[in-house]
Length: 415
Image (cartoon, rainbow, N blue to C red):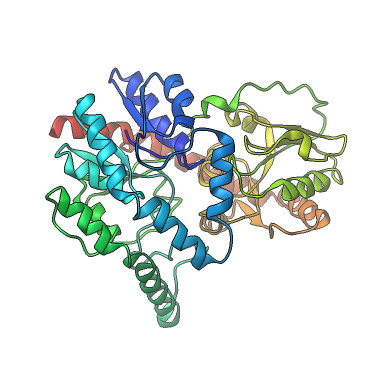
């Protein structure tokens, strides 16, 4: 397996790795040094990126993210293209191939949104699957463009809006194509029309979410498979004991596990819960010290807590709407208050709203507005009913559908 430590994108990859180990396979993970502990905890061997960009500590990761997300959207895109997608593509490809040479493999599972990793997988001539750790991101007719937080456009006007946005998204990444094709040519690979078209060369593209959570379209390429969310808690989540007075409902607050400039938002959410007859549990994530978040007496602030232990007791979750938190919450049948802050979070939020399992609040909302939103999911039973109904959908999909581990085993058989 080859991945980068993108925060929420890493735990689902490690969930797949752990399941393969449980099935008796030997798994080696090539990733950032920050992923070594999680890799070892999953029972896998570990290799670090050698020449490709990587982070070696949480502090280094925070500094990198803060820099990449600084300035205008155009500046952010330019930096991501230069420092992650196009610029180091050859380095990612070479590191992957060198690792496979040192540690021969029967199949590869690779991060699908880092082009250099995909190039390396294809150049290895091994069967491989590209992993997408949230909703389907490729610009596709029938799907709203990734990052917009839109529902699919309706009618000629809405469909035209989506078509224009898809064109703009392809243009935004199109400048990378000559460089990516030069890297591909150096390994004897045919040119592609763009970054997303490289996914067509993978035997499988595995989307690590529920097909019922994502919007549906008949235009998916034939190699795409939805394999369901990975719900395992990360190894660093630790343990949790519910020692507070349990006469009031528990509200879990879970924003990004990595830096997203979230300290003020966490503080306003804690103040909002102080206005309500609830028990609040605020998890700051590894990038924020609990001491940086001021909280009233009925709110406990910790750095981490295992969602698998907390969610069965929670009455609501207040979240940035990262994919992992949203799917774990829905799988537990708990309604959400979503405060999307960027990345894929608006896209996840609009899907929660479509299900009727939660409400949306602006990330800059004052405490009284956040408190009103939490109260609304308590007082209106439709939110809880919708969340519990979708939990049954997820359970049925997990029982009857093919998982990422199933697809990985099929790759080995094909190889």
